[in-house]
Picture 1 (tube, rainbow, N blue to C red):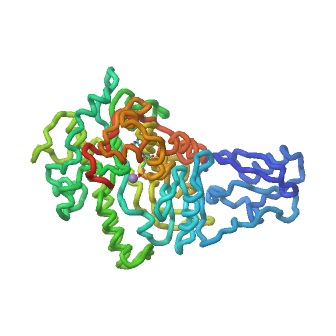
Picture 2: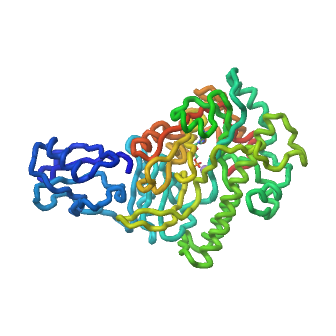
Picture 3: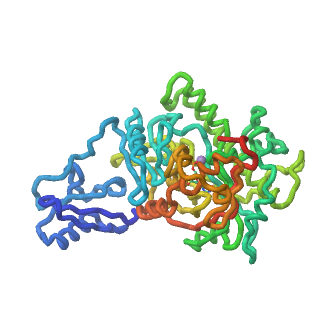
Length: 482
Ligand SMILES: Nc1nc2c(ncn2[C@@H]2O[C@H](COP(=O)(O)O)[C@@H](O)[C@H]2O)c(=O)[nH]1
Ligand SMILES: [Mn+2]
C-alpha cells in the first residue's frame, strides 16, 4: 500500500482534527491511535470508526478501501460522525473526484453523478482533467458490470502515442524549418492500407480505409514534434531510451469516422443502451470496438510513419511508402484513452471483474502514459504508481478542456500570428481559422496542476516533461474535421 493521508477526527469533539500520513507497513489502528493520543492529549482513546460507524478492525484491509480519507477516534462511546454514504440523489454507484487543486466544472461532476446512477455502474472516477461532454463527462473511468457504448463515446480507440524522431543534436530545433517539411499529411496515404492493417491483425473494409488511414483528422486531434524539457525520473527515462536534445513525435488521433459509426448503430433505437456480458449483442459490440481500437493504433503508427517520411524528405507518391518496420515504428508507448477493458476492481473489500469504460482516461497497465497539456503548454510522460484501486486503473489523459469551444469565439479577436506561434516558441500548423481559436492554449486547464493532483494522490509520478516544437492540426481549411 502506498503512503496515504488520513484525517483523524475526535469522535467526541469534531472540530479537533489532525492529519496522519500512513506509511507502507504501518499497522493502521496502532498508527492512528498513537497519533490521536499524542495530538489530542487523550490517552484513553481505544477505538477507530470509519464513516458511518463501522469499527476499523485489525483485519480490515485499508488498501481495499481507497476512498477512506477520514476516521473518527473514540474512548468507547458510540459513533458520532456523519452517515455511511453521502446522500445521493440517484443510483448506487460511487463517485470519486481525483482533484484537489485543479478546477473541475460542476456540470461535469453532475454528469458523473448521473453516470454513477446508471444500472450496473459500480464506480465512476473523475480524473483532474474531468470536464463536461455533450451528454457524458470526459476525463473519467467508469467501472460497470456491462458496457454502455455511449460512455466510451464516438471516437472509439482514440489515444496518444509517443515515438522517437531524431537523435540528440547540439543545435536547437528550428520550428519553422521543421514545419516546412510537413506536407501532404491530410491527403490520403498512397501505400497499401490492406498491408498496413494486416500488421495489426485486422483487414481492410472499404474505401474509408484509403481515405482516412494515416491522417490526423484535425478537431481535437494533433501530432506534435517535441523535445525533452526536463527529465524527472532518470532511471525510467533511460529505460525508455529518452534522451535530452532528441526529437520525438507525439500523435493524438483515433479511429476517425469508424467509432462514430459503431456508436450510431448502437444508439439507433435507444439513446443509451446497456449491453450485458455473455450475450450475442455484447460479443458483436466488443468485436467492433476491438476492431476500432486496433484501427486507431494502426492509424497513429501510420501518422508517425508519414511524419518521419516527411522529415527524411521521402516522396509520398504511390508505392513509395514501405510497410511498417521496427525501425520506423520504434514506439515508446501507445495508450488508448477511449475504450472499455475488463479489470479487477475492489468494491467494499470484494474483488470484482468489471468493465472499465474510459472516456478520456489513460489505462495504468500499459507502462508509462502521456499526459498532453496543450499546443502552448508542456506535456508529461507519467509512470503509474499504487495499486490502481482509487483511480480505477486510470490516469488523466491530458489537461482537459477549461472552456467550451463556443466560449472561445466570444473573446477579443486575436491576430492569426499570435495563434500560430506559442509562448513556448513553438509553431502551429492549422489552416482552419475556427480550430485555431477553439484549440488555443487558454482552452485547456493547466497540465501542471493536473499532474500535481495525481502525484499527490500517489497514483503516478513524472518521468519526463515534453516541450512542443511544432504542432500539426491541418494544412488545408475545411477538410478532415473530427
Ligand atoms: N501537447 C498538446 N496537447 C494538446 C493539444 N490539444 C489538446 N491537447 C491535450 O490533449 C488532450 C486530448 O483530449 P481529447 O479529449 O481530445 O482526447 C486534451 O485534454 C489536451 O490536454 C495540442 O495541440 N498539443
Ligand atoms: Mn482523444
